[in-house]
Every structure is written in C-alpha cells, then in structure tokens.
Length: 172
Image (cartoon, rainbow, N blue to C red; front, side, top):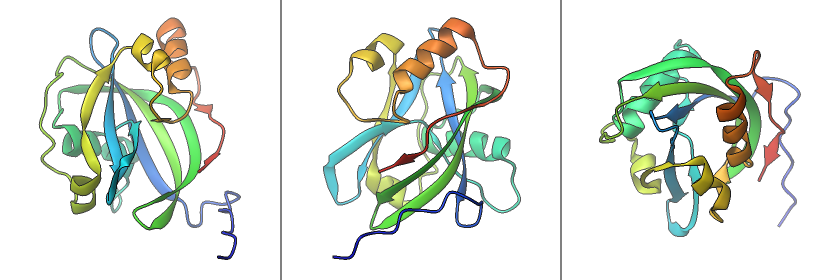
C-alpha cells in the first residue's frame, strides 16, 4: 500500500471551510456530539457541533445552521471566534482537509432533536451529551479538538480571547 501524501496546508485550495460551535449552557457545560465511523461504531469520538459552509453563507450562518440541524437547538447567542484549527483526518472512506473556526455560543435550551442530519450523519452520529469541564478533563474518551478540556478550562477562567487562537494543526 503506497504511503499517503500528507495534506498541503500552505494554501486555502482544497480545504473545506468549517464552522464549529462551543455551545455552553448556564452551568458552563459544553455540548458534544458522539460520532463514529459509519461501518464501525467501536471507532468513536466526541466532537463539537458544526460543519461545512454551504453556498455563499458566512461562517456565522453555517455555525447556526449546523447547530440547529445537528442538535435542534436554535435559541443561542453566538459569540466570537475562539479558536482556529486546520486538520486532516480519514472518515467514511475519504480524507477530509478542513479549516475550522470555533465560535463561542451560549444557550439556556438544553434539549433538542436533531432533525436535519444528512444521510452520512445519521449513520455516524450516535447522540449528544452535555459535559462539565471536570468530566471532560477526567475522561479517557477521544475528543476533538485534542486538549479541548484545557481549552475549555482556560475559556471559563479567562473568558474569550481578544483574538482567535490558532490551535496546532492535527493530522490523524
């Protein structure tokens, strides 16, 4: 099997533009989705809601749309961009190269129904859960972005950064 060429992050060329949401409830819990490979539920991880931009929508519009589609939560106050990350990972038989922006959002609506999932999401998203920072810190589950527990703790301790923080590139 030939070695896979690592993705080229030097330009915006093939990068999928993604908006993600760090959604906090009044108790400062974060909402994460539980995902897995479509054909292998044992290969699983937790991740923030979000997804790719569609058409001419802005990242803010994509963040709110994706949140509504994936969680059913629509009563949110969208805040600033916290972090930016470039990543590359295999999923569902292909490699995804992404430029992700993570928006802070707050909500009092802690229940919702994911009614807008794509066919692939229906096969690969097993549910959602609200996590405390302490639970996230103690967990041995795979969570993306990596080091989310520390990033969340810093956010809760210091508030949003003055400018978005660029996270390390992750290649899985």
